[in-house]
Amino acid sequence: MSEPNWTNQTLWTGDNIDVMRGMNSESVDLVYLDPPFNSNRDYAAPIGSEAAGAAFKDTWTLDDLDVAWHGEVAEREPALASVIEAAGFSHGGPMRAYLIMMSVRLLEMKRIVKPNGSIYLHCDSTAGHYLKMTMDAIFGQAQFRNDIIWRRQPAKGLATRNMPTDHDLLLRYAMSDRATYNTQYVPHDPEYVRKSYRHVEEGSGRRYRLDNLVNPNKNRPNLTYEFLGVSRVWRWTRERMEQAYERGLVVQTAPGRVPQQKRYLDESRGRPIDTLWYDIPPVQGSSKERTGYPTQKPLALLERVIAASSNPGDIVFDPFCGCATACVAAEKLERQWVGIDISPKAAELVRTRLQRELGMFYTGVHRTDAPQRTDLGDLPPYGAPSNRQLLYGAQEGRCNGCLTWFPFRNMTIDHIVPRSRGGTDHIDNLQLLCGACNSTKGTGTQEELIARLQAQGIRN
Image 1 (cartoon, rainbow, N blue to C red):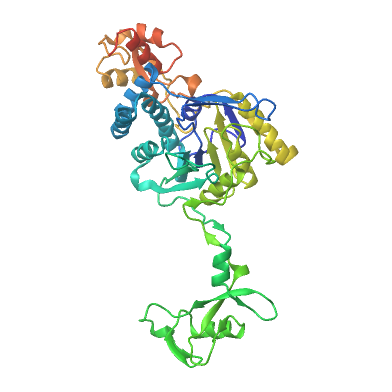
Image 2 (cartoon, rainbow, N blue to C red):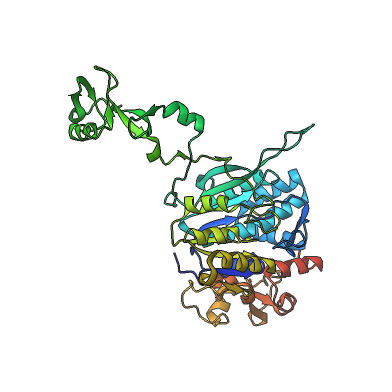
């Protein structure tokens, strides 16, 4: 694991792929992302709302850059490329383009999360099943933990041909078996309380239920004894049983009956949450937390995610932070946070919301540059002869753009991902290009170079 190469409360404006490529590996504890859903819709905040000016298109078409990205994925992650290809065949070009966009970003998120970290991807049924396969290919099927159903609201109106849709999905993956997980609780259902906690203690008026004290393991000689005239294999030692009886926590409802433990309702933390989240409503029009941002999620939803899969002081990362609900929730729960959004409006909303929550204690940083990684150790100058020689042999003398063979002296060294977009001087981010391809690439990425060469008919 490495230290983050940014400060707490940092929000970037820009393309998250460029920023993430410059973030140190294994530097965040929890990722929550609420990306576009491939809904084929355009979103805009209402005029006059706090988020007025925020807008994004959730429509995807396959272009040359996507094709180039897919080629990179196919080289690095053949199983993932097969998932994308299958989605293209079954669902068409827009789904393929969408999954390519998501895949290159999820690959970076996997690198950034710590070994004891987790990732929650928020989606719906439009692309949820394809995203599940995509994440299985990237993180490993064994790391899948839950698909959580968040019921936004009861369906309205009468659906005449299909069942109404009223929920989103959260796909939860843990990076390892050591991933942080803190069980969360919700209040007991009133009917369950009525049936289970049906006893009321005289004097105090406390409701309680009676629980079994008999040990299911019969081979426990040290726990086998007679108590209140009943011989059993008990869960507790005799000393603990007698102490609990004196405190009124063990009761015998009639002579000869098996004693039971008294459990009070007011000492119960509630029911452990499962994967059906029906108790968190969406952000209503009259809600104080409403900003008007399209697709805004409720603060309670993010607080549950963050409380369950991180601890105070941990770093929460939202690469599609929008109106920054995850950042606000992280701050309230005493976590560190970092966010990215392509819209400058997100930075305004973060500043406004957190200043309202924290006042003078909000010291957030707004950046538009890509960070430079500091976790790679001391690197030789990127143009060092040793790098050139190693790359020439690895590429077998061929330009990594047009794929044409050139003598060593005609090759120029190049950053695959430019420094301005988070690229490093590490050998993994270096390549050799011929002069023409280097000129064509300029300050662009390798994917953009390949797309241009394909458009010119130089590279198939």
